[in-house]
Amino acid sequence: MTTFAETPFVRARKRNELFAKLVFGAMAALLVTPLLSIVAYLVIQGAPLLSLDFLVSNPSNGMRAGGIWSALLGTIYLVTLSLLIAAPIGVLAAVYLNEYAEDNWFTRVINLAVVNLAGVPSIVHALFGLGAFVLAAGIGRSVLAASLTLSIMTLPVIIASTKEALSSVPRAFREACWNVGATRWQTIRGIVLPNSVSGILTGVILQVSRSAGETAPVMFTGAIFFRPIPEGDPFAYSIFDQCMALSMHLFSVTTQVNGAPPALPYATAVVLLGTVLAVNATAIGLRVYLRSRKKW
Amino acid sequence: MVSGLVSASAPPPKIEVSGLELYYGKKRAIHGISFEVKAHEIFAVIGPAQSGKSSLLRCLNRTIEFVPGAQIRGKIAVDGQDTARVKNVFELRRRIGMVAPLPVGLPLSIHDNVAFAPRAAGLRDPKKLEELVERCLRQAALWDEVKDRLHSLGTKLSGGQQQRLTIARALSHRPEILCLDEFSIAIDPVTTMRIEDVLKELRREMTIVLVTNLVQQARRLADRTLFLWNGEVVECDRNDVIFSEKPGNRKTYEYVNGTFG
Image 1 (cartoon, rainbow over the protein chains, first blue to last red):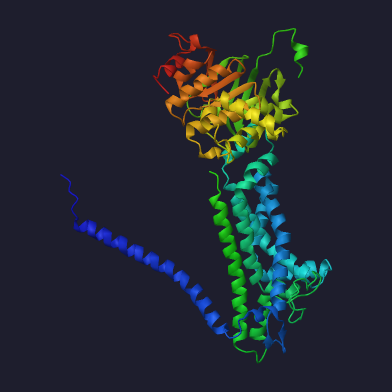
Image 2: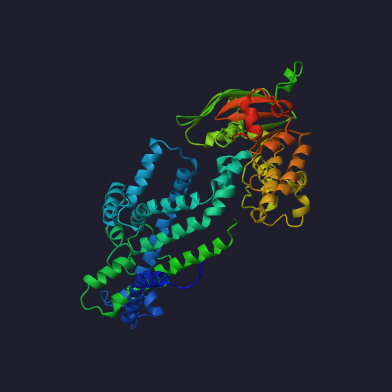
């Protein structure tokens, strides 16, 4: 007769189980440590300067005093404009690739291009942007040229994440629509897009953090060392102006400016990180909200 | 429609398939089959898995075009018109109602599930849509169960209810032919019997093509039955022949009596 007694063999397996759980858990916990220590370190170091005033006043005294207003606004301009360019192109291209395209050499070339474009280092994007938009297209160093460069950089990732979101809608739904005489577009419009919009939006929003953080692409194409603008005016830049950017500002105050108070780069980094985390949190919140309305 | 021109002679069969071949890439799934479906009959297609039954239905309404690499040869005519040449393939698909093996409630409300096809065809009037939705849900024997919650999600219904919802959606575009692909594999016997009763009602208005794995279901419902085996027609005849002691082919006898397959 079988009993449920604990044999030494069972005890050994239980011990292994516990050991595995602890090791895996420790590795997972390890991941959180850098993030928390980075944030804590930055906030502590930057604390003396952090205030609302820091956000809305221009740098002054050769970047050694004042705030980060023109850099903050510049980053907002760059990120917004680049998303306005990349999101529609990326989403529409992904809809084509996922819903319409047949498997032929043309589609394969496009897919290959998307994958490879995603692997291009940002400094190469920067050089491309300098050559193509600033010089060849004659836009000059400006918010527009820098945003175009950023959108080339984010486009492949937006396409990939949108395709992923679209293909998560079951094929049976599409077939049901085709069977009742709906066109591909009616199917996409009525069923596919409404049920993949959460994934599409999250993918797009997550690109904000990449655009905001990249230094090289904007440094070559439109970001400038120093430029004061009217404080508190959200429309202070034109898209044909050069602008300051948080990522580049951080680079400058750390490496190019002598005699800046030690808290200045840290406070700038806190604002950059805070902006990115806030946007990511929005994306997560949006995802949770839209998921809760999921219909199957 | 050219029905005025041909009304003098005998009406063409509802569906006429001749020499149909279907290739998925290089693999041949249907090996040149021919048969006719008469108007207002229940026509059953039986055969084991992989015999080409579902593919055949996809060929009928040309949704096979959405399968990459699929190629068909031969001819399919609906009401005497070659389906390969129809200019408005969407109207062809509306002429043929399709019910898939697994119930597919679209992620829309019950009302919108049924109203989807008429809307896609351009019907906007909410009053007319409401009437149509009620008529189709009644025909599919679902109305009494859902009439108080038409605006809740169709995907939240039970499997059997979703299958009747799928039938209601297939009826919403007023098809003349209703194709059901193993509609009972995901639902219980009681619901199956209810749907079979629905089909007996519907045959007065339309032609029904019933693809089924259940030999007994074909025997119960159909007028004629086609036995498909590995993409080839073994036999196609009236039910009293197919299910008799002496059908035209020994294989048919063995299959319907469960000695093989």
